[in-house]
Image (cartoon, rainbow, N blue to C red; front, side, top):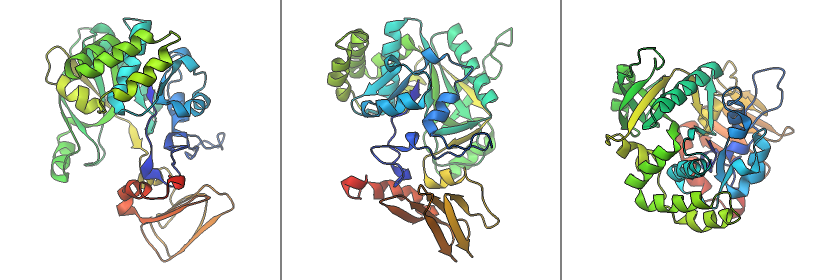
Length: 367
């Protein structure tokens, strides 16, 4: 199940309410044979090739984006689109999928993946996800989380500490560990400590669950939410399904899967949380600086998508969705310039996190 419910406000003005970042075709392929840019959701769907059959792929996103989702994921059926009437954060997206899958198959096991990451190489990703499925198939009480090998002491990500290795006489689970603890976004001193220790990984936000196990866990830690999810599961596949979701889903407590499930589960002996380190290049395309890292840089460190001309400028990120528009700069450094038909953003790269606040202040028709 791919979660595609984010609003992408830190990528304003290109990411808007009507078309948030996961649907924007702004990721340029490095392959000459693929000249056309792709969306993050499209890339997420392609990442499942050879790993998950097309009829076993689900996407959870706003109901209003149904057409965009079905167009982005090749072979996705309308029945496998989980339309949220309103966003209620990641725990409810996970619970929604678990309720639907448990209704279809009491022994369903599913991966929860994200729609805003670039993960390479594909072969390592597929190998680690396969290991995760094997772990849960062998013991349904396990919850698997994937930790990305850190490349620097990041303060914007959560961390997972790996404990003892999970032993198996056949070596079938080599590369898997018990998860010792979860730590939300640390300060720089602690992030540096975790980075140096080599036993911590970035919390990727990707998981593998047994559907029944995750529903049981939600009933323990978020009992009111569990009642609502049970109603959705019971109605799924009937003519009342859409109305039940519309009535029940907005009433579910808005909370993330990390706070609502993973943190209390880590302290509960009924659940065994496993961590699988994933040594991949992992890019969270959540801001203009992170998007800029996807673009080739010139001798002065300038990165461009569209047309741009720089004289004496350095470390610029210049983005335009208009092939006839030219962004031109002289003697400036460390700026982000994003041009769209009806809005232009100019900001210092080190203040890019404030784009989210700016997006909330612009006139409603520009959000």
